Length: 535
Ligand SMILES: Cc1cc2nc3c(=O)[nH]c(=O)nc-3n(C[C@H](O)[C@H](O)[C@H](O)COP(=O)(O)OP(=O)(O)OC[C@H]3O[C@@H](n4cnc5c(N)ncnc54)[C@H](O)[C@@H]3O)c2cc1C
Image (cartoon, rainbow, N blue to C red):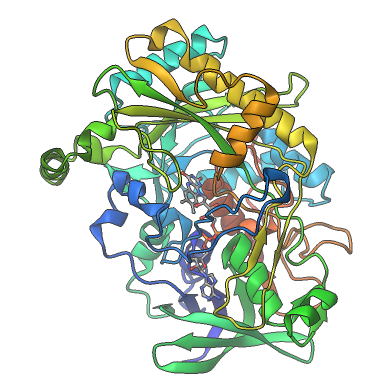
């Protein structure tokens, strides 16, 4: 069968596009995903996230040694499964600040992407179980709900943050982002609502949509300045698949610049260095990498207040039974379901620190596990000024890319991140948490100076898994993609995923990626944009 659109990459963006484009039965769509299916029940269980940063359904990549983090090499989970990050992430549903999107217009030159213009696309994808107002809606494909079973320590955390001067906010995705509260989650009835289940599920029986897993795009095929298809490795061998209208690259902020560079599209000097024949010299591909870096405080609890208590076998079994029979208990928790947004820089235009309360210790790869039950408070600086790169190590499509987020290259990032860590510590020391928290274990007593905290950060920091910007859109010639997401200088080729965001939004990046793909679908289909919101 021939295809009108070939989409490489079945992450959130690829699933949204496949679902939306195939709504028209006259359009034939192929979605290619290098990873496998999401049949394992662990992917549906909110608490399954605990396994996900440790290598399950991931490419197994790490950063290059980080020059400004004392040479640390950081484990860098990137999803390799249908649904991409939305199948393995912590399910936090955050949209960031209105000013994030307004800056895409005013600073990156992307007309059409202001907050008022993107809000209708956030709403279109959403099936919010609780909120219906100017900011939220229901009836969309993606389930959004509040935690079903918050534990007492999470309420104590909310009180502690207010004692530390941070107001309560019941909806970070509404009129105000500032404050502390429970997150909205991409879950529906205590089951993960990944982009695959939300957008491909309803499209399952469409004859005009083909979804192939275990199929890795090795190259975008370019003929006479136009993308005409892809070379794909699947179980049956290597094949060439043609696209009549467009090839859409949706391989994520690491995978998309990787695939483009493997196709000879990128900075000519870097391509030659890697042994790739240059097809189209485009220096912006793989540049401008931005990510959020997480620092954290871990405290030991006075008792079994977090899900560390479930780690014992008989309790794990009971938690599983409880979930399967009643959809209640620990398995319904995404383990990070409380947090908020506040300021490191008092002059910042909107919150520049995000907190995530982890209901345990050692939840994510590389994070210390306490012997007794623990609680973790992550803090991430949200608007880094440092810029990194994604480059090829070689022309071999099996080789891991060189991922260099270049964290803390700009001293401002370090300064704000350390302030965020101090804020997290302050919250954990408030009276409301006293009945729950025995003592801070990390960074630990005695580490007070900026230098001591920076040394602690070098040893312990981790990615917040929010890479963006590596095929950034913009109106200048220097941008990799145009504001309608076409790759500059080649026909028939678009990039649609987190890589096109010119600046990282001040939040987790799944909902913004879904929004980008929702808007891209209208652009590709030649539909007028949804009317701007009146907020
Ligand atoms: C562990 C983790 C936790 C996170 N937690 C949250 C959270 O709680 N909330 C939130 O909002 N965000 C979270 N994020 C971030 C969020 O999931 C990402 O921003 C989002 O998934 C980006 O979507 P994407 O479509 O751009 O790319 P990806 O999700 O990276 O998807 C790209 C897909 O393309 C496939 N692919 C790559 N190369 C090829 C190729 N050559 N051929 C075929 N297929 C290919 C990949 O296998 C992958 O499935 C988390 C991410 C991770 C990894």
